[in-house]
Structure formats: C-alpha cells, structure tokens
Amino acid sequence: MKKIFLLFFSLALLTSCTSDDDGGNAGDDQILGKWFVAEINNSAALNLSVSECNKQSFINFKEDSNADSEFYTETGGECTLEDSDSSAWSNEGNSRYKFNIPFEGIGSQAGRVEFNSSNTSFTFYPDLLAGQNTNIVFEKR
Image (cartoon, rainbow, N blue to C red; front, side, top):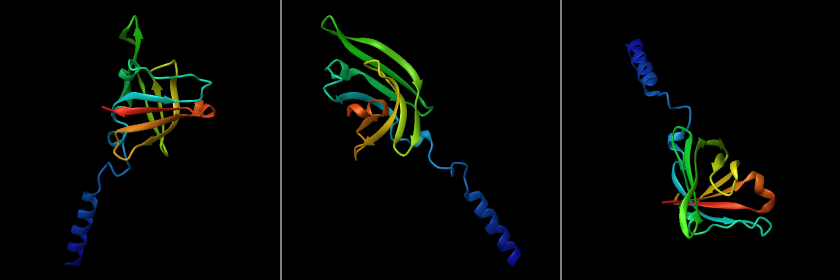
C-alpha cells in the first residue's frame, strides 16, 4: 500500500511541474505595449525638447522581442511621419532595457527604466547620456 501511495504522490508531483517554471518571459514584461513620447528632461547643453507633434511618436514593444516605432515632426506647419522602424528590444534584467529610440537620431540605447506605480508611464535613463542628466518619459495610451 505504501508503494502505491508513493507512486501516486510521485506522479502528482511530476505532473504539477510546467515548462514555464524557468522564470518570467517577454509575455509578462511591463514594457509590452504602445508607449508615446511625453517629455525629455536634459541639461541645457543638449537642448533637446519634445513638441506637441513629437508627442505622436511611439514605440510598440511586442512579445516577440521586436518593437515598431514611428517618429513624427512638424513640417510646413503640419505633423508628418519622419521615420519608422522595426527593431529588437531586450530586457537585460535589474530594470535595464535596450531598445531603439525613434527620434532625434538617438538610435539603439541601453539604460535603466523606472515604471510608475500604475504602469502608465516609464522614465528611461540612457547610459550614453548619463553624464548629461538626460531622461525620456514615455506614456502608455
């Protein structure tokens, strides 16, 4: 009887394990979704700013570790799409991400991300611009 009980217990234990027990995956990442540029905070030396038109620019982070982005700028008094891109993004752990920033020629950057408590915005602190006290705020809409 003890052997039968041990056999059933072992089977129950083995079937309760799943293949996703290896930790989080991209499908659980807070950064997934469409994030719009809200503001750039920087030193006067860089002189970067976000216009109302630039606020239409976004990055759409997808589960497959790819991101689509569009950058809008004002041309002749109208908002126009200046550039679009599809590139890879990665969660490097410890609140660090790497992704392509779609405006001002910034390009692919690694840096620290801080999400607000309701996960409706995040602030990105790019490593390359750390000496300039620069961060970029994105909002989920």
